[in-house]
Image 1 (cartoon, rainbow, N blue to C red):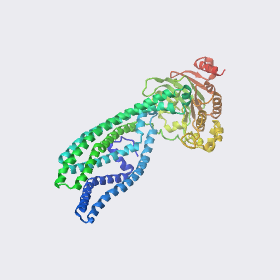
Image 2 (tube, rainbow, N blue to C red):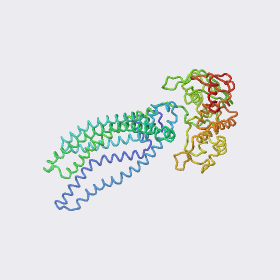
Image 3 (tube, one colour):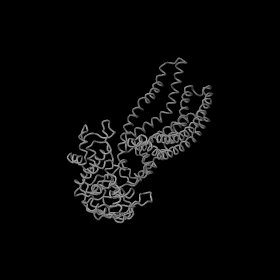
Image 4 (cartoon, one colour):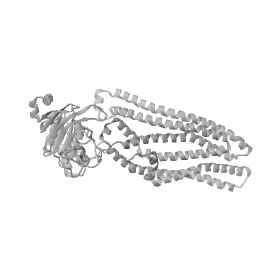
Length: 593
């Protein structure tokens, strides 16, 4: 399934023929049958009632009732047998459509430029588009089919009604026009409310996480903010609820107001038809059948047709945002595996690099220049906001909208293929992911092209997680997290050691550790770094940590201030300079002496 170009409404209507052609054709056949059945059922019902009255009233042979009874039974069987079969087939078709459409959509989302995932407006867009996109798109044809059937049925009923009561039938059709206008307007208002609600939902959801989440539980109990936050959460929840309720109430009042008028007109039509029955120009059976058709028409015009119009408008608005999602820029090969045979890392050089995050004006990096050589250990030091993590995002090509040059082995970084970058650099961030898979699988993620049991065991041992793995019921094959009933959760420090194992098992030539040991105590952190120093001989490493003890083992320390390098050297050199690094180190030394 190709979503590389804009999805017009016509293409959306034709898409089901590509995804589930057999079911789509069957559903159209079903709707054609339904459309034909509607007016015929009125005549069959009238025929049955008139025949039954003749049999009972005039003593005609009971055999006269067989044919209309069989015809009426066929219609009933159709409803009881055919509809469930179509529903069963439709469920299977939905599953097939989901499989065919979700994969390319997931791949599209995986290739999005990283900047879109740090932009709140884009995230809100993704949240709206990602609510069952297959059902939204495939549902457009179903809405159109349902609308055509209802409209055709309504017209057929109206024609029969106009034939016997021209005034009532004409007024009924005229009154339906404002219903369609109301429905179109309601659809647009509903979707706009959904847009506005998405941002508020995200905000309320964040507050809800503070109230219910596991991670903030400690501070929640310590500071006792739960009652205040709960009050704020419910206030936001009520705001969103009332907002949606108001839109629904307006739609309900408008549509039901018109339905009442249609109902009153239908009642009047019954009285208009009564003289025809009394004079014998209309049979009792036709009158009763028209009665059912009339109220079906009122229901269609007052509720079903407007609802389909509203759905039609809502889906058109959804399609606009779906196309906005398709137009979001991608990073080529962002979803590709790391290169199996990456080029050798030799040198990385920043030349007068400046960077501002998209949508902001603040310079994070301001003319930064520095060089990293193969086989050496580096440490970036600086206060929060100095640009340390931003540098790692540029190195790993999460962003490439910088000014200046970043040369990798003498070639501008933006000219390198993403699979080569993935293979050459391994980054372990402070906000690493906790995967709800087994211990072994958590570690193996670090080597996506395939690993061995021996490599996994070694990574677990060097990260200090081996003893914990041995204590688990199924060892390294134990499921972790809360997703599975048998899942085992870990402490923050244990999760961090397991994430560290991913960095160890990675074959990347450059390993970036961005605050990876924040959840460990200083002694455990020192042990981890000592182990990592032993296994990182011959490779290039970049350490970012607020605890400067880790910087002591670096060959070169870059001190960053306001997006620039202000000091450079090893630990002893920088301590002798008595500059920013020495001041920060001495300040931290006081924590332990």
